[in-house]
Amino acid sequence: MHKDIQLPSHIRRFEETTLILQITNYHSRVFLGHANHLKIMDNWICQELEENHYSDNEGHSKTDHFNGYANTSRENNHNKDHDEKHYCNFLAEKINFHYNQGTFDKLILFLPAHMHKTLEKKLDQHVLNNIQFMHGTFNYDSPLQLIERLYVLK
Image (cartoon, rainbow, N blue to C red; front, side, top):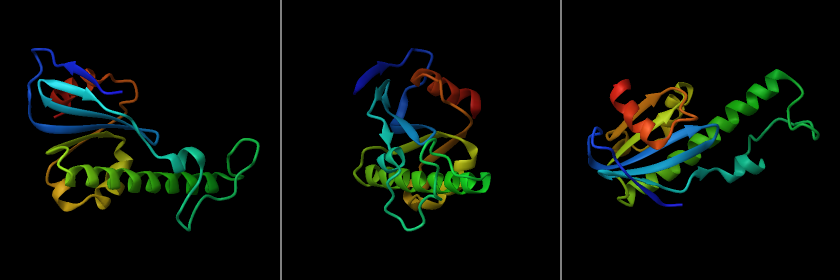
């Protein structure tokens, strides 16, 4: 689904090729900004989380087969923390790979604040030198609204 959006004249041009991730609920919308264009890329979705198939040893606590939830809130919290760490590993792998391939020079992450530290620990140092974190809930923002928020949230 690669779609180009021309930036309106009131929005500054991208000085560098910029990868923009809108991270919400274990899905990431991906945009690539270059000059005065914004390209909508394919979403990054972690299939293991979608299907509850894990390759690591820790895994989920046992869940109820009818509703998919664990029996206690403690187990649910454990599962939530596990899913978040698993998703941050997935994101870090993809980000590091694309940076090493030369896909982008700068990275902007729109993400919930509680994911910042976990993801930051997993990214390569050369990626961290070219990153900007924007905290908040950006579930319903359009690509242009995200770009406009860069000026408001700085």
